[in-house]
Amino acid sequence: MRSNRFIGCLAVLLVLAVPAQAQELQAKVVINRQQVSNTKSEVFDALEKKITDFLNDRQWTEIKMRENEKIQCNFHITVNTYSATDNSFTCTLLVSSNRPVWGSNYSTTAYMVRDGQFNFNFREADQLEFNANNIDNNLVAMLAYYAYVIIGMDLDTMSLLGGTDILHQAEDIVSAGQSLDFPGWKAFDDAKNRFGLLNDYLDGSMEPMRQLQYEYHRLGLDRMSESPDSARAAIAESLELLDQARKARTMSQVPQLFSEYKREELINIFGKGTREEKDRAYEILFAVDASQNEAWQKIKK
Image (cartoon, rainbow, N blue to C red; front, top):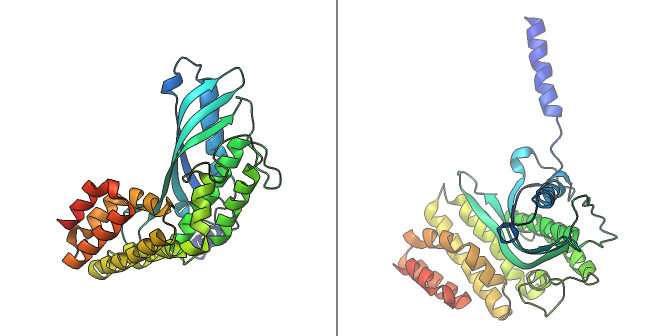
């Protein structure tokens, strides 16, 4: 009996001694090559595997995460053109990450963006290696940028301004990207490119946007299962911060981007709201993106 008890205790100690996983991301990568279907598949298979390994096998920060704590994210890459002559790819990336909502089986979108300038060179034998002090490969730079943005945005939803240090690492990559001969890194080229979105998000005048991330998720969604009415009221209050951010930088695409990937969620949340909550939510969201008026009208019903 003592022997069995000892073995049982030893097993528990061994489990407790297992360190948390270092990697932060659990990325699913899909390469859509239908537009270049006459090309041999080997280079695309290699690209998909190497991007997956690059994102998932690297420790991006000092944060220790267990397997069930990793950030679930998706990289859907559509290849528009490919040249075997110079190994060049022009692609469109749709990247998204999810965040679990406490006390439920529901996951919410924490970040989503479409990058129409996801262009790079890649050969089947290439190794993707990241060195923050020497960034000379555009594919590596873009993947590292999105890894840091995903982690930083996730941390912003967990604590107020929690992702600041990580997002500044993404900002460093943007700075390094200025010397790369590829689009998406430079100011004024496009308000929705990598430079424009991150620069706006980290601008001091847009701090209400980052406060929104925390209040919407931690004070709102995470309390929805235990107190739906007060949680919805907190989310309604957080939308005032969205309105502040819109007014602070009227040309910024960041508030609109948030409203795009939260659209269906917001409609569902305010489906049971008070008349005052519905009307004010509609007013703010219409001001952020009037082109989605058909969707926002559903809130008022």
